[in-house]
Image (cartoon, rainbow, N blue to C red; front, side):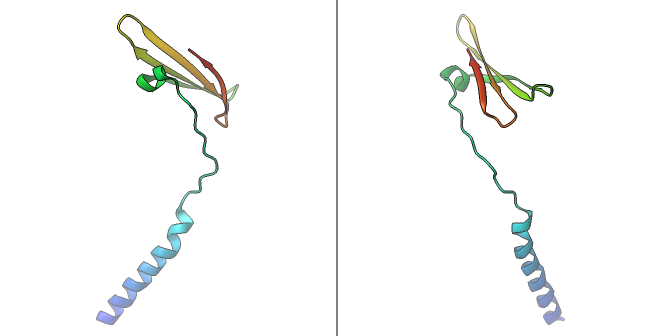
Length: 86
């Protein structure tokens, strides 16, 4: 009985080690974008995706003592930066 349990355990571990790389995700591209000081210290106010233009719009908001600063960043479908409006 111990031999059967040991055999089943070894089969399970071997199957788990073989199937793990098959289930993992592969990173296709990686992009980094420089954010301004206001965007870094602020919060993400809104996120919008326009399906007709295939554009993402991020609005960052930061509260200062007497004003609120908004920064809008637009990206295309592949996350290439289109515009940056402060």
